[in-house]
Length: 123
Image (cartoon, rainbow, N blue to C red; front, side, top):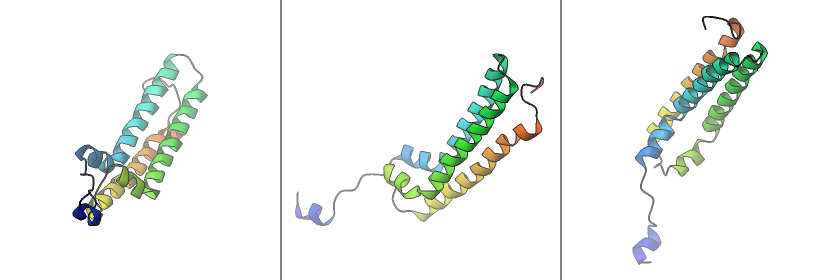
């Protein structure tokens, strides 16, 4: 190691993919939630499972997705370190805002179970 590297250790270069994943984490969880809720619900109903099974799938997927986003909001620093993001308040603020909006969207998609009967025709 040179003297310069002793005082200024080399840092990892921020990844473009890591930055995009960090920014869109809430949207990615929301997309996975919608896929599980609508695809799983349709599959369970098509296979002849009781409507309660489809309802429990929606409830479990909604609770799980909300838990993942809340964990992301609570512990953002380790996520940022994993993607080697520089300490930037703007990126952090945008990621937090998108994650909060995704929480609302996940709750909205999961709330349909309270208003629409499971495995009904025309869904």
